[in-house]
Image (tube, rainbow, N blue to C red; front, side, top):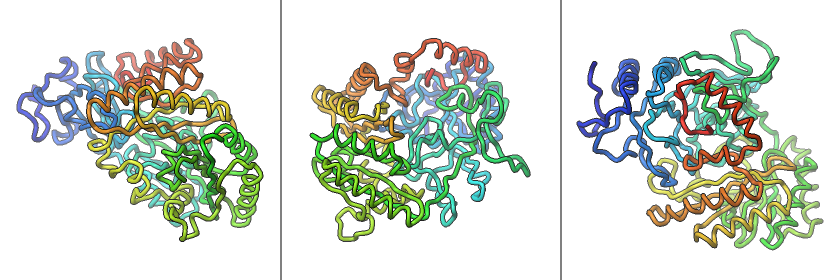
Length: 504
């Protein structure tokens, strides 16, 4: 059997594979991909060397190798190699690896092989008339938005960096400015353990003219592969929303003492359909990057449609906001009035809601302090992502829970509320900290406290970081449902080849 070679520039002595089965799979992967696409761990190196640092300073897991296929056609054979035996160590799959705040590239467990799909970066098909695209895991929101420029369709973009993966974020139920990205998924190309490639949901096929409808007939299997360890996703068919003819974002401010009352006032506006996309409420710390007033909350209420409807709805929104008598500022012109100090960021926000990400990452750099390529090496950053009922009472309680954690740990927190409907809020709690051991330890303690106190309050997380992967059990409403998914896992992946420890 030929000897495995170390990563370029690495030590001569290799970290022994976890088992003979893992070594055999890595030898076969090297023959399949070529040595330049298989990076192996060395015996004397830091365990995080292959993946590099992560922004949250989670413990670097032991990784046996990183495999980087050049095309989707190589993935079935790789998956089959690592699904032959329980001793192969399993595959942890990443897209662009920018899962910042939740683990970045890191797996949940040690002794796995990382399958890096970053070079699968083709937009395979694009139909702006019917409103769909087929994208691979390495396709970024900046890449797709450039293709859609000057067309009647747009991408549903997030406020993260332009170089982040659309598919990776959608599969982890990320939230973008037009809605949850999970709702954009209409079909998936998945590779099952054993190497079988199938498509689920809706998928374009030759001259097929069937309308885009993800559910099909009978039980739908599409949702099985979201936040899932049942398959490797190599492509997705996604919806492309219609680009609005006009768009405006109404900005409101209110003091912290009015949090409950202002939240209920905003809820009424959302529930009555006066705003589109995902309106947002920022606390004072989160709103700073968007030109929010010092020590005040900031609200973004997007309105889009025809020019006439936007004008009418904007007048209604601003009139209702004044009538509520809880907001200290109401504006519908920050993006057009060049005299306002935050004109540029307001313009970028409006462009984001219209499907055009900030390709220069202006707001992202303001929030993070560094560019996308430096986040994992220079920033200290972690996320906690609970769901909260949309009510003033619930939001005020969540705010008190955050204050308790700040008092207990001294960690700086900021909160952004994504208003997903008139009943549901996705609360994005971000914590920034210096990159040293003591600060990271306090941030990790804050994460532990947040998971405990929010779960006790009935506010479960909808995404998990790698150090809290076992929280799925603690927050499940029915143990029988967990048992059902584990029976499916045992049938589809009996040797535990895929994503060990993730959403298990």
